[in-house]
Length: 158
Image 1 (cartoon, rainbow, N blue to C red):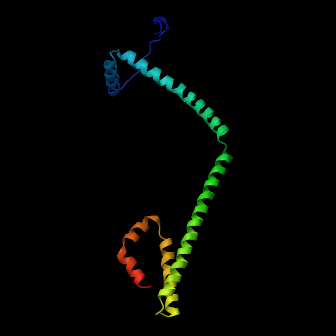
Image 2 (tube, rainbow, N blue to C red; image 1 turned 45 degrees about the vertical axis):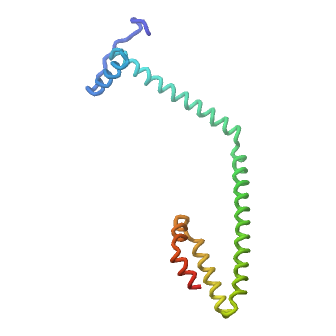
Image 3 (cartoon, helix red, strand yellow; image 1 turned 60 degrees about the vertical axis):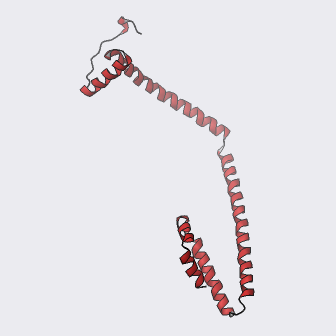
C-alpha cells in the first residue's frame, strides 16, 4: 500500500445506485468504501494494459501460425481433399449409371407385351422423375421419400 504522503485526495460524484453497489461490494469484502473504489480504479487501469498485452500476444500468435501453417499448404490440403471427394462422387455416379442401365435391360426383357413406343415413353418419364428428384433441395428429400402415396402415383403413371 502506498504511504500516506504518496496519496492525493480527490472527490468523485457517484449516483445513489452506484454508491449502494460500491458499499455492498465493500461490505462483502470487509473493506471501506474508499478501498473498494481504489480497487475498482486499479482494475480499470489494468484493463488498458491488458488490451495492449492481448494485442501484442495476438500478433505473435498470428505470426507463429502463419509461420507454421502457410496459406499455400492449407490450400493444397483442401484441394487434395476436394479432389478425393470428387473422385468418390464420380465412382458413386458410375455405379448409379450402371444400375440404371441394368434396370433398363431387365425391364426390356420383362416388358415383352408392350410396344417399343410404350417402353420408350416409360423410360423417358422415369428419367424425368429422376431429374425432378435430383433437383429437390435437401430439406425436401425426406418428406418426398416418406410420401409413399405420391411415389406410387408417379410410378403408376410410368
